Image 1 (cartoon, rainbow, N blue to C red):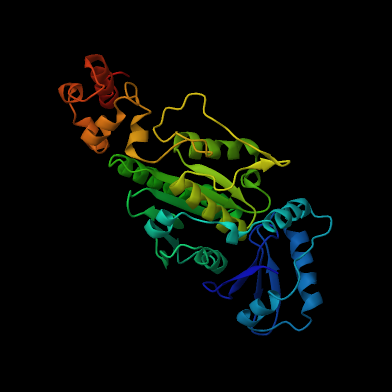
Image 2: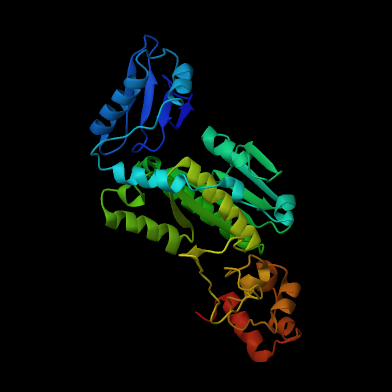
Length: 356
């Protein structure tokens, strides 16, 4: 059975992974076992988990630590006829195919990328990420996000905010609106770094077998939250079935974000799935590796009107970052190769907002 011991409550809680949402076990000093769950099918889950534990552990340990070790040695829970059974089957099927050892990073990634995990994250997540072939790994207190990967050379940064489905629901609906304040802080940080010409990508991984659309009372409300995150706040939401899958996704996101390549092509039915952009604009789009964007300043400039392959290198070299670009006059721009009076006026109008 996969579980995590949480020591910051009294009594200490042992969370059971893959069984509903926030299903946990506590034990009193007298050996009284209690199972609780935040799932909608609470009664059914509590009954199934309780019976399963008592079946394999007729003598319940009175210590949470001893019980935790004992629970890890018994088979997974099977909840008969429960609505969560199909997602759980999917979890077992997907997670069983995840191979962390198959992930290979380039030499530059190994040398320059520093991966850190917040110390409050589950031990399973920290342990799984610690085995990645990234020598620059640490567990620390992070000011933003739960997982952070940064390239010491470019400053490019990947921030992952991990939430269980139960945690996300509470953080959205509780009066302190914690999820909203987290989103705003992350968005502000993205803007601050963008002004320096550095890309920060934020991904929210929502972890739970039932999926994100069971988080809020109805689908419309959850769709509204996804809209707020993705279209308004420019952050991403990804589903994960379990902590193990979260670790695997994190490892892959690090690879994709910093290397901009798929090391293993996607194959369906033995056929390789390829895509070549119809109108590549970024200087990084020179080969088909499943890549669409690079996270350098040149690529940022390519989204602006008036900027093209003919002048992007000169503009990037002159401006250095977004602040430098704002300070360039039309005369400064005209002096650059590939920039004429009309192009300079177009770029200047865009960065000052006069074209709106």
